Amino acid sequence: MSGKTVDRLSVTDLGVSVPGRQLVESLNLSASGGEIIAVLGRNGSGKSLTLHTLAGLREPDSGTVELGGSDITELKRDVAARSLALLPQVIDDIFPATVLDTALIGRHPHIAPFSWESADDFATARQALATMGLAEMHDRDILTLSGGERRRVAIAQVLTQEPGVYLLDEPTNHLDPQHQLETLQVFRKAADEGAVVIASLHDVNLAARFADRCLLLFGDGRWQLGDCTDVLNEDSLSELYSTPMEAVTWRSQTLYVPASGDPAP
Image (cartoon, rainbow, N blue to C red; front, side, top):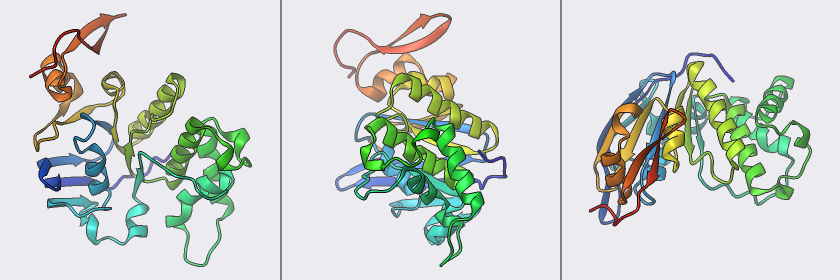
């Protein structure tokens, strides 16, 4: 969507925990743009909490997150939102609104107080809806859409925001295989145009296909970050998911599938 220079996201010695459990300890990560980083791990391993911490929505237990050289917890929300967008895992649309009005929310950080959306704002929202295959639904009530359609509207809203950094919590939730691929192709294009994209995914094969680096969260403080080709293997994935994972070759591609047998120790 946007080819502008992105704000660099820098994470130093980040700690994320819940009562009685350290999920992530001393995480270090730097992203300057032009890549997708996939976050992988079991349910409850801290993927969502880590993304929310990167977005500045919760205080880190330790360490810092910097956006463009500034501590993100010290930035005003609207200032941060002009450079960084978070797609939550769960979005509740409890009020009736059109699809277009919902997508337009993404422009709010860019609009001056007491001002209305401009023609350019509407054009940006319409383009984002078209990108997500929703151009013909712009006047539909959001409450009449299916779960997958609502998810695509939420993604269009994030695209309408035009940030330099996208934090995506399970962006393929509720999407059929076609729309999963199309959605990740959209963010692959955004990354290729200079954006930072950090996305939690449950499908390791989609991560291997679209991401440049993979961040594995083991849920006990440990983490592993590196090129996906280096960190995705049978041993690391078996430990990550606590179940044997097997690499199989299909049409010259390596795919990872659960193997038969007892859970990994």
